[in-house]
Image (tube, rainbow, N blue to C red; front, side):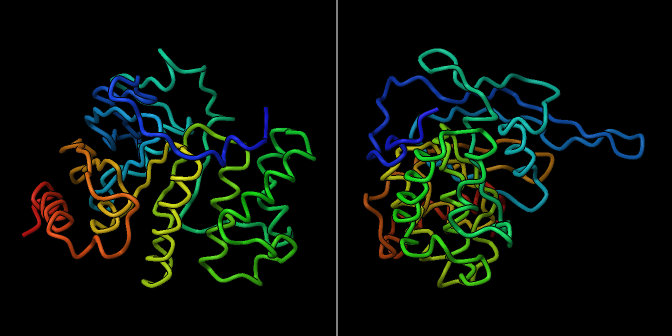
Length: 271
């Protein structure tokens, strides 16, 4: 697998007739606990297109993380259909084509920042020279140039999460899944990381699905927003977010931004 520059190429708009990268139809997931069935995801239907930044928002325990695990190939599903790749796309291998970012950076404390970023490349046996060049380019892209030889404890929480994002991109995945990636950060750092994520999406052109509990964050980050109801997860609505690009924090004061936020409140029954 190439570890060269494609991950740093500029994002290109999705053509109106582009085939979805992900198709979900009536997706369903059941867990068995203490001999009883627990319905975690009841009915999710959604398309995700190449280059999308889909915000996945809903109450705690509604099945957002379960849905990500299904997309990552960590869990199967028990009903409905899921197609990733398919017509118009190259074959999809969850082991190679998915990058994951979690709420905590989960960096290995005994490895340098560069070696942490290189971990997926080591596991997938990507050419070491190419992987190292790519990792250094990613660290520069996320604002960590000069920190390659630092240890995780020498970086702030926001900087560690930047390293985790670089790690998720090192193997040039088609799909990046982020599970509440900024939930542990303070408010100001979270705002900065939101801006960073928009810049990374613009530069890489990757497809992102981002789970968040923050309605404002969902609107600010998303090119589209999927709203899930209280568990078991059911898709209330998935809609486009048409806000000016490139986005700045000033967009949060606009009437259009407020309208999208209110739309999500209404879908979730928040008064």
